[in-house]
Length: 411
Image (cartoon, rainbow, N blue to C red; front, top):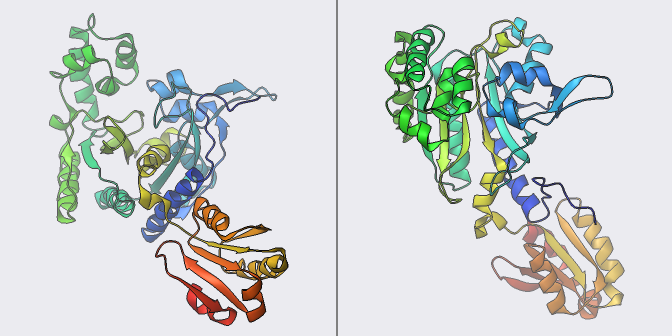
């Protein structure tokens, strides 16, 4: 037997329906905020992620599915979504055209890491990216959008925010941090020693306990912000507070990717065991320029769909009944039921049973398929032009004339 690769998971029903449900909610909210769908390739040039995500990132250093293809091209499966959207934005010359552009995407990402609960080697993200909008109001809107998505999904989260500064305040802070790291060179891990040379602020994201103890005394960017960055961060807090969004300032929140500046945030949930980030993002005003485009502002986020699915899978609400199950009790009614069901499919999700069974077996089958409406016809119903109806959610049941059914099913 050939099995799925380790860390690659099939999403069979009802898991597939949960995925659809989450994406549907995300799309509805994103469209209300003015975002439009974009689809980019799963396979990109490796250089795209080396230049955007950054050499100091574990994603580039350890986790990419990278190979040389038959055309001698150095390529990799996308480990995250933002870089591909930025590349598409530049390739379409929208960076030179000007104007605010807003996109949302969803699909598979790939990272070769140790599979665990809520973390796979092929995983799925929903994300949004906004270009050419410098206002911190867009940062706030992105956060409000995510908060609304989680509210619709009935998922409780904790929002953590930070500011990572910009090109004006980062050099002086970087100098202070490197000096601190030099003083603790013998104590920090090898990854932190490497990050010190590539992107020192990333050391604050180290998961080693001994490093975290050391970094409790490290200088923080939030204490070294320029006047502009501080004003933006203060304004962000003001907007969130005015809109009833609770948050915590986490001065060590740096995100796992090199391209962030100014606003950085994460939504944390403890509904799948230990606290896990279920969404995160921030501002990346230099990324378009790094990838060869005209300097353009950028801000966005991504959320992990598998982690959200894990939360919803434990809840009855995520398995909401939908669709019609139609069946016959004997062979006489099968052809009539089939033709009637084909007409229903023009308006409703309809499951047609091709077997004549007793009522209890049909009801069990409809329940297993999570259908909402059960319709059944026996010899007597066929003769009288009637059908037996049951709503499996409300338990309402009755015998209806066929011409009454449309009114009961509704639009």
